[in-house]
Length: 287
Image (cartoon, rainbow, N blue to C red; front, side, top):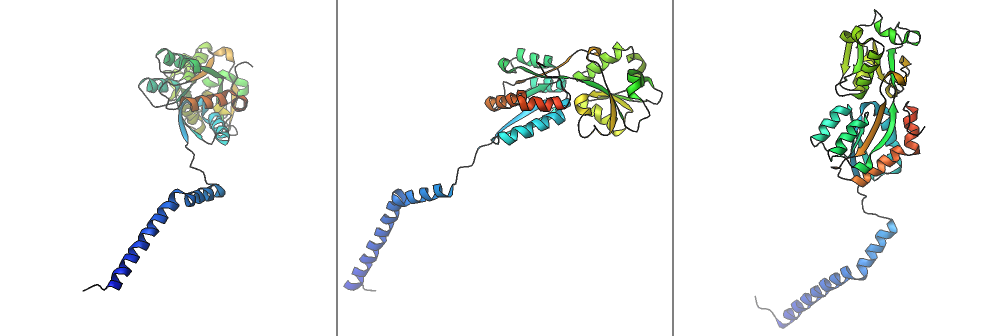
């Protein structure tokens, strides 16, 4: 088909207009139009998403309820840091951390484990702290016929007691303290065959709370928890009956966010953290 002079001029006109539109769009993108879009974003208050920093805490099982409350209070004030606790026996965590387990903070029921990690270069020496001293109690369910208040340790030899729950002394500090108290009262040999060993103090508490054992020697912090406080009776074991349960912690050298970890430990050791720990029966350093 032949193009007439008029059709050629029309074609050139269309091309020219198209080029001008493209140039105008590009100019708008890099000048005032872009500024208007930025201004519009500012006016609507849009903000880039905040990065959440995550830390993992290897925590002694006696801290289960107290530390959960501390973490909730911390999250209410530090929304950019999320703390995930993992509970277990202090000795088992020491082994796991020594083998490279990915934790940021270690909270032990026996500060000696923390000191070993520091000596091995696995925990930051200047981050070491004592957060509490633990207490032991003898605990039985409310429906138990055993009179703990009057019998005390002799309740453990009662003929109705077939199983006594304690934490495993091999790797649980509360288990070692329970064994020391039994030996101090010359009862260990009498009740040894009736001992039921929990992997950690929380499992020992679960044994007696569920009825798998008639009586148990457990952490006061667990006996005061909502799950157990209204369902049993207890007798506090004097501090002199066993070696001190000096509980400590540290930030680990493999931490992926040491600064965030230190902010959480500072909160734990601060006024609000101490109030929560005291409410669960922990004795606090300096008091």
